[in-house]
Amino acid sequence: MSISSRFSVGIHILSLLEINKTGVNSSEAIANSVNTNPVVIRRIMGMLKNAELVRIKPGIAGAELARELSEITLLDVYKAVNVVNENGLFSIHENPNPDCPVGKQLQETIEPIFILAQSALEKVLQEVTMEDIVNNLNKDEK
Image (cartoon, rainbow, N blue to C red; front, side):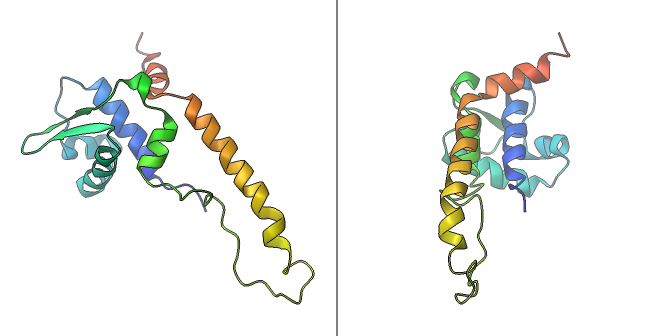
């Protein structure tokens, strides 16, 4: 199982909105860049809007960042697109055999480790901004 692609698509959308500030940013144009259906883009754009990361101008092909790139972290994007619930990155199989010496104790043994691992991931995402991403995208252009 992997983290939902909504996360990378959200990063793609925000990067494109910055790089293409003066261009057309319709869901169709963004979908062309992502190589997906415009409906997918509209759904993710709605999530980004609800998180106050983008502003959408109804009726015209326009979307823009609601904050400076340096103020948007990857953790903001991760949370905006509902990648996982709090402490829900790792799933633990349900209903192990309670008569088994492993089955009756495994969940309580590994759950704190999984929570710590998710926390570590989120700490890394908090340290990276969309500005870092866009600067890395543009480094070959310079």
